[in-house]
Length: 208
Image (cartoon, rainbow, N blue to C red; front, side, top):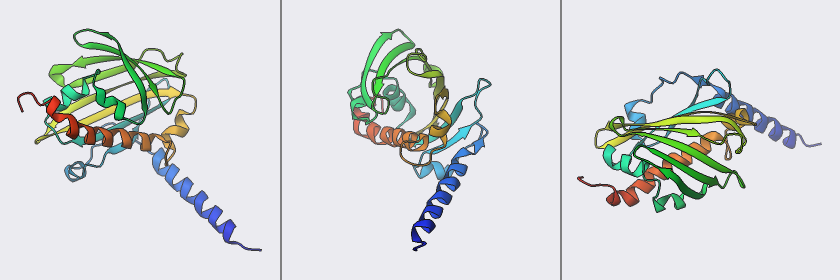
């Protein structure tokens, strides 16, 4: 009898447990990457303490290579055609739009058949965007809300993004260390924004 399959099984089980344990660590929301980490361009992603209702929460910090006003215009352009290049967005529609309030509805490729309706509240002076899922019951969630906070970082922009959410399987999704888990999803989103803003920045660089 060969022991190789058994050894491989034990190895991958250990790797899974180790990775899961690493991703299961919860940090204070005040944790920040170093200046050098930010300059590397790599998104800094970690779990934070959830709210009293339970569920899960995360924070992600990353740098985009354009000035803050340019990225703010990009981030708050809910009509932009660029959204179609995001592999997770099947479709997106603006339902209602006022001065500093935008409601959008989208369908995601990793949640087929489900429509998410998001209330976005814009705070232009603070370069802050807050969002709330308006139809949690229809989209299989208890709640989901969070924010994007932009700050100048030299000639670039530092983005701090946090969210609080709960749905069936949220704990597994938040701690799963490979493709299909929270970390891989957020890493893609941040890197997609970093690449996309470079391609379309001329559309948003008024005055720069």
